Image (cartoon, rainbow, N blue to C red; front, top):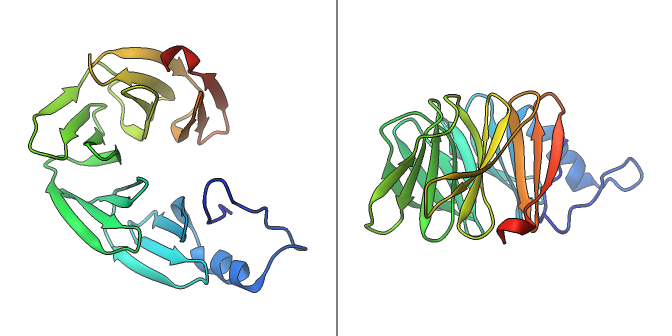
Length: 212
């Protein structure tokens, strides 16, 4: 079970510390492909593509029935749909939509850019203003499974073949590559370390101090 709450304030839920609201939330989450923490609760995406935002009292709203990938920023929730990317605020209210002509397998964003990963392994770098779109194509020809913001104008990307790479956004070059056993399931950058885990339980923590 993945707890809902702010990244710095999650509590371990044990039979002795469990309260009624957490019991309800745990029971209702069911089988979810992804669970991402928010300050106000969490957002989940099921294997069937249902996207929900949950409050701490267990109440929820369905944001989408066809989400292909899920991402969050400090202020937004991102959902990759079949032909577009939908932005929501942290309350679940829709903000904007952007066209996407290919199948998206992973996505991430900051205040200026949107990064889209595709099943062919390519990565699209989009400006959220009116700037040009660029592509990173020198990676493995396997589906992109995770994208997170890295240090100093970089993004960390995980792939279905177990590879994880650190991409420099200015040059478009791969700065670091490692290979784990199994498709990459989790990526998290907490300066200066990048934490990586696969669906088969392989994991690694990389010190990226050199790139900060």
